[in-house]
Image (cartoon, rainbow, N blue to C red):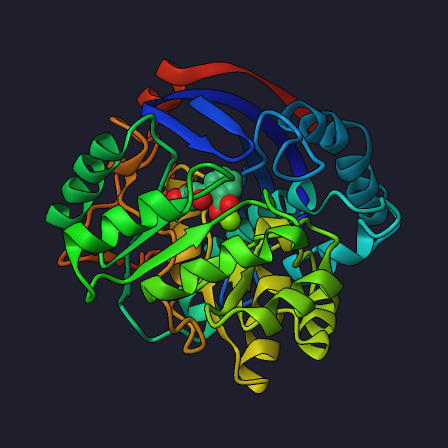
Length: 381
Ligand code: OSB
Ligand code: MG
């Protein structure tokens, strides 16, 4: 496509309730959106004006991953967008498929790079009136919806919260755990909701291998998986832990690319992969990991990063691929927000509908953007 400008929009969305993980508490979603303006080929190859949207799902602080939101905006403005514009000025064609290549000089920073690629992919698909689901070859219309439940002050509060989600129809519950909040909440939820509840836990790297005896006690509760028990770079230790537990190990933070996924599989460090497109540099790399995992007989599911409707739409499309055999953290918009910036995603019989319109199939509602805006800057090509 031909990019003319990229607008970076900061939006603050209040959360319906604080969300606590082993690495901190969030009460607001500081979001960063990208609006790419330019021209892209339509189905007949004629250049037509397009607008594409991307969402940078990085968190405010570098406590989940090394990137942080304001740093992403700065990186885009100073490095990523200039690199793309320079490639374009040199006569190169910028497409979603070539974006990662033109950003390769910048080391790391997958979440920021993913957001740029997402906006270009949306613009490109809108040009030719193709949905993201169709681009992925997805034929499913709905994906099962799970919910990630934060750490609470008390067990009764947790049970009430989980009961609310179960009543709404969520088909899988994920409990955030940390040392001191692990066996008791898992036991309580199992006792209250029974053996049939699809239940899993996420430690966000809060344990180390000396905790293996404690983690082994989770084996009694029939969990689908334990997500990221050890540190991001503890691949070898995860492989050792896997041999001590019956609960399958799922990796989130450790999987930053298809290469790291291949390494983790080869090492025996992972049985199930949480695919978060941003964490691995974008939706195209995410699809590669899906394909790789499927070839190795490993299940994958789509993780979440408290996305607005933009990221949620794209995640739903990706999760329609056949290897996504476990419910993802793709909840309804009202799991986190009273008002989303797009038409809200609703739970329908425990599922989320995959958008069918061109590109992401959703776009920000101007009034919502205006209401929650924290300002924007435009970078011209
Ligand atoms: O580890 O999966 C995680 C949210 C922010 C950062 C990391 C994680 C999460 C979640 C929430 O668990 C998933 C969601 O968006 O529903
Ligand atoms: Mg996780």
